[in-house]
Image (cartoon, rainbow, N blue to C red; front, side, top):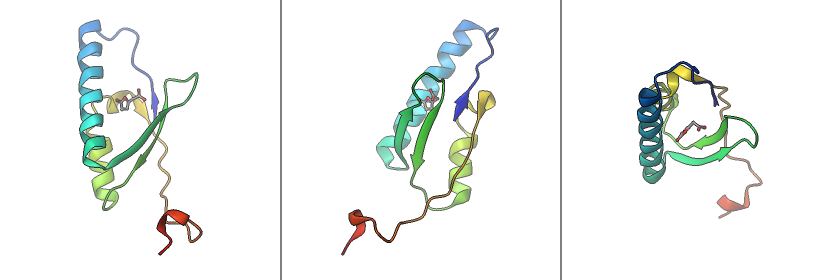
Length: 89
Ligand SMILES: O=C(O)CC1=CCC(=O)O1
C-alpha cells in the first residue's frame, strides 16, 4: 500500500482519518484477518499480509480503509508452499 495524502487536506480531517485508519487496522489485526503489517523503510508505504476467506472479503476490507481514497495498492495472492515447515504434519 502506497499512501499519498493531499498536502492541502484539512489538518483536522487528516488527523481524524489517520486515527480511524489505525483503529480499523488494529481491529482487523486483533481479529486475525490483518495478519502482518510492516512499514517500508523510507517510504509512506506498507507491506501487509491478509488472511481472509476469499477475494470478496479482501476487497471489502481494502475498499473500506479510511485512507483508501489516498492509496495505491498492489495485490499479490499467496498460496501455501509445500515446503513450509509451519504446516508440516
Ligand atoms: O501508514 C500506512 O501504511 C497506512 C496504514 C495502513 C493501516 C494503518 O494503520 O495505516
